[in-house]
Image (tube, rainbow, N blue to C red; front, top):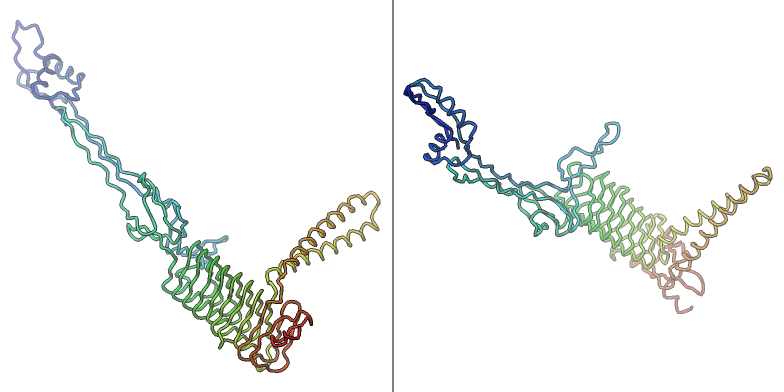
Length: 445
C-alpha cells in the first residue's frame, strides 16, 4: 500500500557540480521498482533535497507513494415501517396511570400494507496499491430476514409487504402475517385487549374488563366473562356469555348460554342451551335449540323467535318480541325524543317572548323558526322510518316445549300476557283482530 524510499548518503567528488539526487532520478528509481500509482511528487522532491544534504554513510527514509485502500460495502438493513412491540407493561395514561388491559400483544396488518423497507447492501469501492494493482473490496451482506407466510418481497427488492390481512409476527429473523390472531389461552393481562381487522380465535376465556374488537369472525372456546366482543362478522362462543358481558356482531352470533348479558346482531342469534335474565336483539331471527330455554330478560327480533321453553314456573317476566325491528325502534325513539325537545323549546321561547321587550321579538321569532324547522325535519324522518316498519304478519314466536306464566309475547303492535302454563305453541299476529294468537286461529281471519 505504501512505497518507502531508503537513501544512504554518499561521498561527493570535489569537482561534482550537479546534485547527486534529483526528482527525476527518484521517480526513475520508483518506476524501476514497479511503483506507478499514488506517487507524491512533493515528498519525492523533499527526499531528493534531504538526500543531497545527507552526510556520507547516514541513512534516511521518505514515504513517497501511497495506494488507495479498498472500502468495503455496507451491510443491508431491514427498517420496520410498522410499530411492532410485544410484552409491554401496558398503556401509560395521564398522571402516571397505566391501563394494564392495553397490552399491545398484537399488531394488526392490512392486505398490501408496507411492513418494512429493505435497504440493499452496497458493493463497496475497490482500492489500488502503489504498483497500480486493484485491491478488491468486500461487498456488504444482505439484510438478514425471512419473508414468511402472508408476506412478500416486492420486485424492486426494497419493500416487504403483506399479502393478506392478519396479525404481524416477528420471531427471530422470520417475519410473517398470520391469517388470524390466535390466543392459545385466555385473553387476560398477559395478552391484553385485541383490536384488529381480521379474525380472532381464542382457545380459552375472555376475562373481566377485556375486549375484542375485530373485523373478521371471532371464535371463543371458553366463556366471555364481564367482557366485550365486537366484530363486523360472526361471533361464536362455545361455552357461555356471563356477568354483564356484551357481544355485538354484524352477521350473526352463536353461543352456548347467556346469563345476565347483552347480545346484538343484524343477523341471526343462535343459542344452544339457555338465556337467563339477558337481552338479545336481532334484526333477523333468534333461535334456541329445542331443549333450550329462556328465563327472564327480553328477546327482540325483527322476524322470528324460536325457543324450547319460555319463562319459569315461578312466573319470571320474560318478553318475547317479534315483528319489530329493534334498530328501527331505537332510531324512532331517538327521533321522537328530538321532536319532544323542540316542542318544549318552542313553548319556552313563546313564553319568554310574551314578557320580553318588543326589540327582542325578532331574535326570539328566529329561534322559534329554527326549532320549528328542526321539528319538521325530525317528523319527516320519523314518518319515513315508520313506512319501513317490519310487517308483523309473517313474524312468528314459537315455543316448542312449554310457555310458563309471566311470559309476554309481542308481535308487531300487539301483546299477549300468558296467565297459565301453555304447551308448545306457535304464535302470530292476527291482523283482523289486531292481537297475538296461536297459529291455529289463523283460519278465523
